[in-house]
Length: 401
Length: 86
Ligand SMILES: Cc1cc2nc3c(=O)[nH]c(=O)nc-3n(C[C@H](O)[C@H](O)[C@H](O)COP(=O)(O)OP(=O)(O)OC[C@H]3O[C@@H](n4cnc5c(N)ncnc54)[C@H](O)[C@@H]3O)c2cc1C
Image (cartoon, rainbow over all chains, first blue to last red):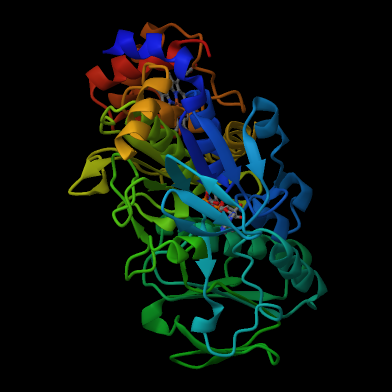
């Protein structure tokens, strides 16, 4: 069977299976490259000419890094022979992707990594030009940075974190830390209040340990049970109202609730939660066979919505797609996630996990994973800050070439 | 018609050895961005390091948390795959 397949391959070269990938972020770009390495003919559909990375964008907001360090292009993929089409995908019909300009791309299998849609409308009064979310790297990131730079010393910065699930569970706390670092070093009479729609969060003990040491009296976390949920804002007046009262902010950064990227909904791939259910072995949609989904858009069980996870899922999904195209069943995978966060320059912490399919979702492998140690010496925090940068170099090189 | 497409699709892809469970995720960190490079290291050295991390030896920042997610058999398979130069 195998021998026959190999012998037959050259004669049928024109029949090479076609896979389309929608979305050229950490998930989609890595999936396109991995599929190409596996001999699949790939077309990547990405709306934007270049990609701006969210990982390390909190450092841009805090003035520690420039936006151009976040930018990645698709020339590396093109050079390898991957077709890259800069169009928005509008919808997915039976075995073809319809693009914004009306063209259609046929596929044998489709991989989608569209990331998230943000829902500022869920918070009455919210205008993201006055109160940026900065939860997609780009103009919003720079707007928030400019607002912080323009703020007078002594101002109140209000940041609000959404309920689960959302992109990058430790992200709001890393952001609060780095903004606090900016205030401490540039505007020391200012204060930051972090309003939270939850009572617990990722790496909480490590963040709280760092905040007590680095930002006492400067950074205050308000959990859901103490009035952390934002119910309404007056964007023009920069007032943020919670269930318990209101805050007059000088700068407000409201991170709204999220769902899978809009194309996932247009293609009928989301469930009532707004996210996409997938098979944890093949990452194939539970709604539409032949379509695979990875990254922030999916319900991944215990695996968080991170760039690390999107990349790990991309590599596993590419193998599964290639196996299915060969007529084989994909083997049950194991996946790793690790999210590094910076609490100040040179001070890194991490959370890691190992995952395997269980009961139709990805579950933690018992006994593995966990966070960096509490009370670790500065040398360990410095090492992890360095490893965070190493990870960023490795993963962006693997995704974008 | 549909069956035809499926068959031609099946035979057109070369068979390649798939990575064992967990092996592709190592590439998130080990790839040349600054963390230790695994490709080209002897598989036995990788097995020894992983079993040490799993047993709590040394003072790694993260590898203990990762190694505990794999059995010795899985570690051996991963080591053989990631040690291959690529
Ligand atoms: C402030 C912040 C900090 C973060 N820090 C980290 C970190 O340190 N580590 C970490 O692992 N993760 C981090 N993350 C999370 C990380 O950014 C996401 O998990 C990751 O980007 C998800 O990848 P993805 O491929 O699923 O989606 P995305 O990266 O959002 O990519 C989706 C792509 O699809 C394209 N697209 C969408 N719809 C269409 C369409 N219809 N047609 C064509 N193209 C389309 C978009 O243009 C985009 O390029 C952070 C996030 C934030 C907000």
